[in-house]
Image (tube, rainbow, N blue to C red; front, side, top):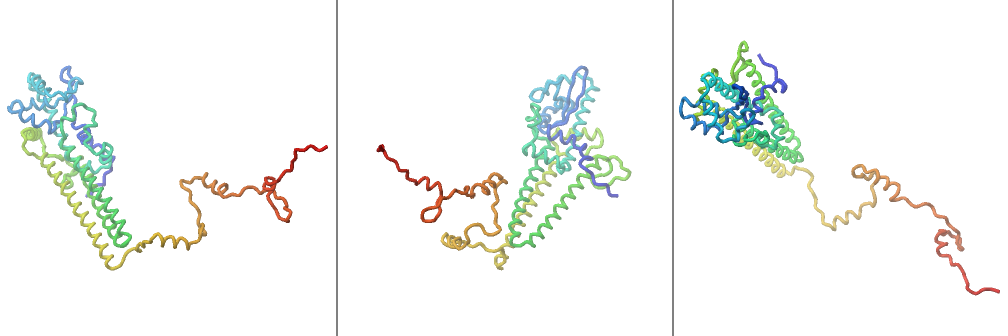
Length: 391
C-alpha cells in the first residue's frame, strides 16, 4: 500500500515546536502554583554544564532540573538573572513531593517535545518556508531576533545547530549550481549537443533528489499520525513514537543521562545528521569539480580537432579606418534608429525639428535675370542720403 503524497498545508502543524526551537530557542509551558504564575522552558546545552555539577546528589537532581527550567515568575523574565536557579531551588525544596512530581513532569514533557522536534528537523529543512526564513533573517541564527532578553546566553540548541548547518550547505550547493550553469552556457557555444546531454542528466538528478525529499516529508507526516514507522507501514495504523523513549521511566532515564553528559540517542541523531550533511556537501563538491574538469577536457579536445565557434579576428586602427571608409555613408536601407527607454520626445524632435528646413523665403529678381532672397537684398540695399538742403 502506497500512501498519498502530502502537501505543505497538511504538514504545517507538525512544525510548531520545530519553529519555536529555531526562532525562540526553547519551548514553553505555563502553570499556576497557588497564586504564582510560572512558565517553564525546555533545557538547552547551555544549561547542561551547570546542571551536571549542581545535581551531584541523586536526591537533588529533580529539584535543580525544575529550578533551571523556570524562566518566568509572575511575568518577570529570569533569563538574565545568573543566580535565579539557586534561589528557586531553595524555594522548591519546601514544596510537597506531589507538587514537585507535577513540576518535574512538565520538564519531562518539554524534554520529550524537544526530542520530537529533533526528529522532524530534516523534513522541516526541505520545506520552502524554512528556506525563506533562513533568507529573511540574513542567513544567521534567528535567536537574536526573538526579542526576549537573555536568550543569547543560552547558546544554540541541537535543532538550531542542524538547521543552520543544512542551510549553509544548501547555500554552498546553490552557489556551485550557478557556477555549473555558467560553465555549461559557455560550453554550449562549442558543443550544443554535448551540453544538452548534460542538461538532461542534471534534470534527472534534480528530479531524483526532489523525489527523495518528498519521501522524507511524507514519512514525517505519516509517522506523526501513527500510520508508518521509519522502516515502512504499520499494520492497523497503530501509534508509533518517532523518538527513543516509550515510557515516563525511559524518558526520565534519558534526561538523567543527558544531565550526566552521557551520549544518548539525541547525541547520536545530532552527530549522525552532521556527518550526513558534511558528507553530502563534500560529495557534491567532488562531483562539481569532476563536471568542470570534464567540460574543460571536452573544450581542449574540440580545439585540437579544429572544431569550435567562428574565430575572432583582430584589426589594427588603420585597417578599421580603411574598412569603414569603404562602407556607404548614412544609414543602410532598412535600418532605423532605436531610441532608449521609448523616449517619444526624442523621436518627435528627430522627425520634425532636428532635420527640418525652415519655411520658404520670398525671392526677388536680380538685374541679370536670376533670383535672390528678399531678406538678402534688403540687407545689402544702399539708401542714398544727403545733408545739403535744396532751394
